[in-house]
Image (cartoon, rainbow, N blue to C red; front, side, top):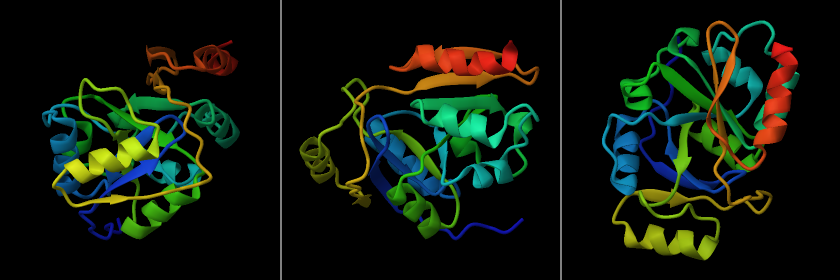
Length: 201
C-alpha cells in the first residue's frame, strides 16, 4: 500500500449541506484539531470524503449490486453511506472509526474537495463545522467569524460552485447482508428511500 503524504492541516470547506471541517484521513493531529473545534471526545467516529467513486472503491469492497451509477445518484441526494468495517480494503486509523463498527463515507464532485484531496494525497475527513450544540453554518460570514475566534491552524477554502442546502445529510447504513436502515433522515429522505428500494425490491 502506498502511504499518503502526511499533511496535518485542517480545512474548512463547503459541502452540499453545510460548511464542513476535515483533514487528511492519515493525520491523527487533524482529527484532534476537529475534536477541539467540535468539543467532542475521541470516541466519536467521523465520516470520510472521497474525490471520486473510483477512489472510494480503492478503500471499500462493496456488494456487486452497488454500481457506480447507483452511488453517484445516492450521494447527489445529500446522503452519507455507512458500511461495516469488514468492507474496508485499506487500513483506516482508529481516530476515524473510534468505537464504531461502521465507517461512513461521502463523495461530492466539487472542485474544492477534489483539490483538497489531491493536496493531502488521500481522502479527507468530513463533519459539520460548528460548535457542538450550535446550529450548522451555511453563511460565509458566520464561518469566518468562527474561524477567527479559534486559535488553531485551520485553512478556509472558498468554492463559489458549491450550493449548501442548510440541512443535515441522511445517513444510511448498508449491512453486510445488503439491507438498508436509516440512522438519520435528511431533507431528501423520501428520494433516498426510493433509491435504496431499487436494490431491495
